[in-house]
Length: 221
Image 1 (cartoon, rainbow, N blue to C red):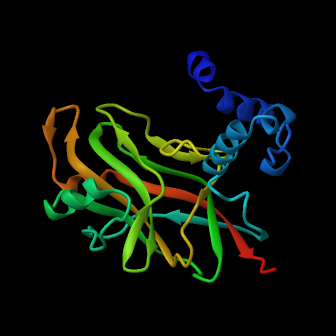
Image 2: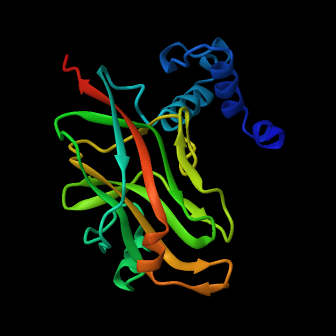
């Protein structure tokens, strides 16, 4: 961690500002950055990325929405993914399945993911599980983690302040999103027998998810 921050001084300054409890406002960045225009431009870009480009928009908070998934019948995803082309290959090969679905959202609102976790039998691995948002006729990956041969029963993709896939502090769903799904892909394996299992068997090992969303209304100037 220290080596990474030493090689990325702008990221180090962003992290220190957040830890000190100060909101990083790119319009009022430190004077040391303002004195160096190139550094300030980089700092502005890094801040936007780490904050999910959310800091540059104006929204009114509308409260939280909690979704508790209990699983669904075995469904093969039909939508192509815009930001995970490898997943599209898995889809055509029949190596992907929807674990949880039918969570409808209001497309007139904006949403950010506060947290998401799911439960899976500890011995089922060699798959990736991710949250996807519906975006028009496509889907867009929001989070994802690979399950090894042995793992905890409850796995968190996103916790308050961090998305473990994108390493962003805010995980926004795309505009006009009208639903989310939990998708798994790969070649499921049982670590006890060290052999592959069908998606039907892997689906039986799924024990639900918890998703917390923040809702926003965009303010028009």
